[in-house]
Image (cartoon, rainbow, N blue to C red; front, top):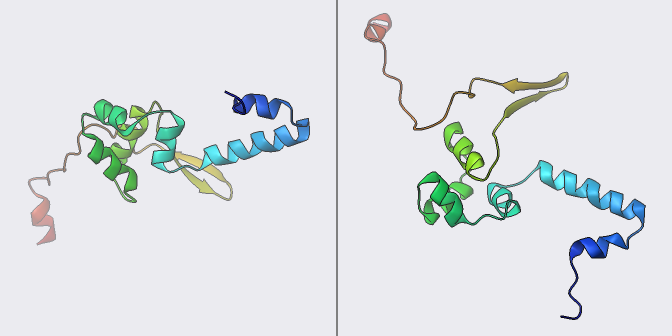
Length: 122
């Protein structure tokens, strides 16, 4: 088919400085993505992610549109597309990996109050 070339062949002919700018921009784009962009970059369909999460495709579409969700749900999604979730707080002095969520996963379970918890409030 005339006129169709792999992108890699198109960039091979570019000057080294331009290729370096392209690589830098690709790195920037990888640093910030929406969930559906992550899935697309991994060449996965919503159906495939749903199969891994044991949910149907509409549930994956809904999850990808959410702006607020449980860390465990986000972790499950990221693992379904082949990644690993890390929570990092950024400060001027440096980054801190938050480990509270390292054991979070599986089904969300509400904590039951301690038997004497109500007495302390009375």
